[in-house]
Image (tube, rainbow, N blue to C red; front, side):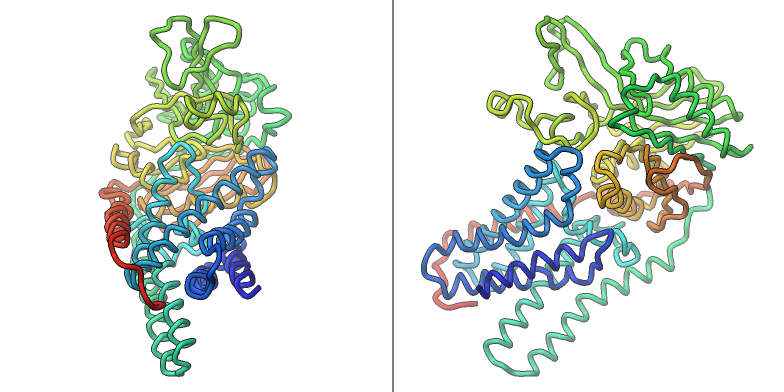
Length: 532
């Protein structure tokens, strides 16, 4: 009963830490009850030890996943249930690995392994076919962005490391106090834990107030058409959408506007790739671009390329049932520029698990058919591209065309900056989950990308929340959820590359080697004879 209470407490502490409603200070103590429960089971339980560790940790992680990502259910019940159960399972397996190593090594080695293997898990979750990094620990500070300004050096893995170091320090202090019952232990631990929390926090605040926003900038108009994706978006003609975008643009334009930004797949008629240059999307993009000299328009489009040539069939091609034809499906961003016939195009390449990307298709499709997780988005396996292509405006500035789910991936976004992006443009459609934490968290995570890259973010969300975020990670302007409209704002341009842009997730790469070394070491070391 005591261990059950401890793991439930851990799950609740993790939940109340999470954005956008939570307070991240709790995260520094959230894992301590779970670690205590594992310690009790490892040292004092005789039967089904591994099963108890796995089951109790699963309960803790299930509470965390359920309370923070329940909103997936509103898009698809199957997808929501699967995502919560599967992610809880993966976290529990990671914790079980820690338990196995802790049985065979001392406290320091086991703790280092826990930190490392958790970071390895998060890194895998950023890159494999079942990618779902929504609950990577470093994301927890997105609403308290002044606490982690050093993400420009470490990325979110710096936050993960910080969280685990504090939790382990607290855990060690609790164990020592329970063993010796001496108050000086608590005093020394309080000083150490305070330093671990407040020293990085102080460094971050110094960076925050010392940082100078870029002098160069441009004026952006952001459109929020507020088209219901379930009842209107895919049944409304592109010409009607184009007229609405034209109207919204005219409401907010000034003589100085450089860019008009519209959301993901705002043109959703399924334009043929071969007819793209003559499409309604391009027509209205050019109409908007011509409202001002040297102005550009960037928006989203759903496109399709149908073919019968077997040599063109690729891994991401979809077969048309009962025919010899295939098609490639694209979720894309395009930019038109006044006085230019060069229309640039980018295809979304970090895909939502399920309908945009069938994970491990050759293995799972024969087993599952078409039943997969659907977290929202479009309706077929998407075709991606290798490069993080930058779209260039008439004034010579480049922007990152980040489409929806791509904005959750830190190192991925640095690819645009390496290729010359002076600011980030995020286009998305967040109405799939209703008025829940889903769209709020998605906006909040964009602040992390701003700090990591020191780039302004211009964000156009179909139903909201559209926003301009400065390179400190603060929201300067926004348009609320389920509101139709547009607004104008300044976006700074930065050409410098941060340490994180240059070196990416180097902390996770170090963690991979450390975790492997400690694991191998534990396998050849004699089992410990006494508790840590």
